[in-house]
Image (cartoon, rainbow, N blue to C red):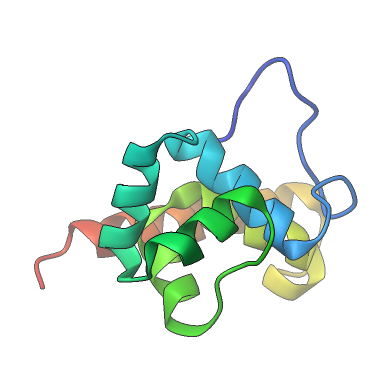
Length: 116
């Protein structure tokens, strides 16, 4: 999950560009060690240099790699929904949008636990 203390809750403006936002989410969840690179490679099947570029915020994942990250990382899902803004995920008030975000996160978790 995203840090609860010591950092301003990210929104679309202070997350920065897409590659930096993805790097932020991955580092919050996994750190920036070589073990994190191995985990992300296992999740996505991407090459080592590619994953290191994602963690450095140089480039961001696209296509199937992005789907694989969302499938395995609640933080990546949350960051993408924050960047997309409330109107793209759900309409209505801020509390309604947060409820929608919680629903999407729980769906993501339950889909990950479902047997393949």
